[in-house]
Image 1 (cartoon, rainbow, N blue to C red):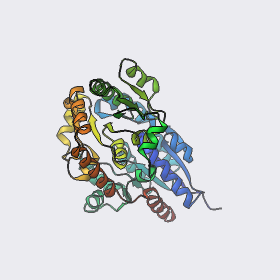
Image 2: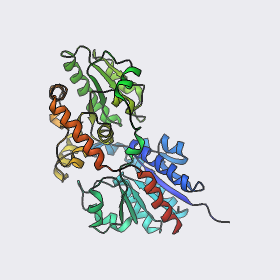
Image 3: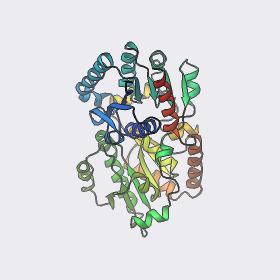
Image 4: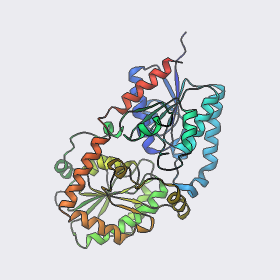
Length: 381
């Protein structure tokens, strides 16, 4: 009897869980018999992945924060390493999460398990020394940013540019007026989206500053409303603990992040996947980011790119403001927001350039293209 093919898939963060779930569904459409297990969240579980370790055990921010989760991360590494050795899958699919996944790919190479790395570690931004390990340990790489293909190919990696998977996740033709009516915001202006991040540490670092900035803006905009969609990895109680201390009109959004953003005139967004989602929807934004002092100090010395935000990196210029570390204050955030809300041509230019960024991210179909590569590799087993 022919052995059922099995794929180990590893997604250590909320965005990777989304992309992993879409990839699993795309592979299953091509071959429903393939089995999946590994690290992931609710969305991957719903797609049919047997979750051995929840992604919430793995998600960390910065260098100091990782210390507290080291025991769980080490246990997860041992668990997957033992499986690769004693019951090897037919394919390993690591998704981003480089510190863990590049190491895991080394184990896979040792036990002759082929590796398809989906969503490139951002070694072009920092720690370029990792590229040598990737070239030795990864059989194929599927990248989602247009400039990554050439970067990896020039360094000896078998790479395919598949486009950005968020283009398939975000509904097309969302209408601002319709979303405004559905959410009861007809008399509100401006509507501000608050996206402080998908990890507890990011909420603590970003949300208090966002709330104080909204309070400042409320003195000039009495009809201002703030909307806060919560990532599935964040406890509602944590967000509520900050909101209840404020008099500003900020509410937790019960709508999806995409519907919420569509209703917004401006978004305050923590650096990460949410900035790309906001760009694809064409919503003006301000990028914010604050980490521990040690994380920021180290990051500032190793980063090799002119911007932190992927939106600006893809554009090749500063399209959206970046308020990082000490620059992230309520007064500065409120000032930048006012400039965009009242900027007229500045606001229109930002929207136009966000449209250009969306075009550069590809045509959609990233999950399907990557699924075909996975099937091709499985057929060679």
